[in-house]
Image 1 (tube, chains in turn brown, red):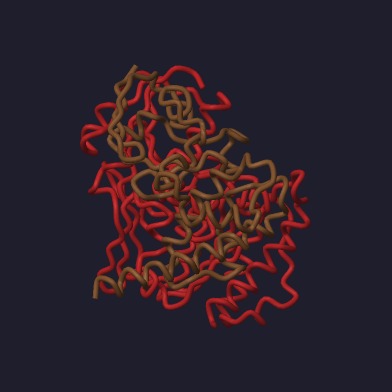
Image 2: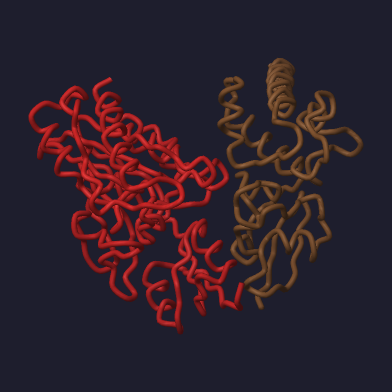
Length: 166
Length: 265
């Protein structure tokens, strides 16, 4: 057993877990954050993607104790109260989900992707960047549309903020 | 996963000490080891995490000499601006590993110490004539990669960095398994001051190897046309559900031609 201390969605949390406990199980079972899903459990599908120290990683392929000391953002940490994160809003607007199982991972991957491409995204880049996320319902089309739309909304927002600051 | 004891090493020396615990294994990005533990293909008693050691991280470029810390992630290699200038082929190769989430965690040291026969880095380091630096010695890539999942590393030895001289020309091309993104065949070619080197991953029954046929043809002329009509022997190549040995042999010639064309572009 080891002590695991994390900052999850802005809150400091700690607990004790077996060393073999995967981060995804710690989030779901110890912290009750069940928005992060376990899909394939073999690092392929990306339903378990969360941000660890600002990087989108697969929480089914990381031990909770490995993450101890890190800052984590899960799907539950994106919305600002009742106001959806722009990526969440775009998935809703463009119908980027059907059953919704892969959606938390898709959205966590998408927010990381958009942050890494401040110059903007095109369809080919979005599809290539989604290699680690599998969706069995949508055929990806509306997911790609949602990410492209969110990327534009967020670029406009960033410009607006820069103007306000200036 | 079986029960395991996790240790976070404070330094390379500390990691070497911790490795003496039972059947301990080094943990870096964990992108291979943790899945192997989950399926119980690996069952170390202890894990020694070296991924947070700052002196194992980062890319240094000094003139033509490139040194990459063992715990540098594929993402950091693929996006390093200095490396993109000195040896863009290696940065490009790193951008083709796995998927973005895997590239954020997986490391160069972990990849070469594991020496998966379909991993990308072994081909790159062999073609670059790199030196693998450990906490005990320096090992030439030609002597480092021994066979399937086998390297020259001794018990308790820790890869700390890799180093190479940036070649004048280099490129990597791979034909990927669409599900795993591992190479069905990957070919890394370089043209440096010591001549032409071509290393092949994904295809050999004994893991990564240098192709004498390709090197001989390219030594005459480093041009894709020098490989026209080249027949690569299927002897010693893998056959599995993804590709037969004959198909892999054919792919080696195709990937080599594409790599040379990319290196000259």
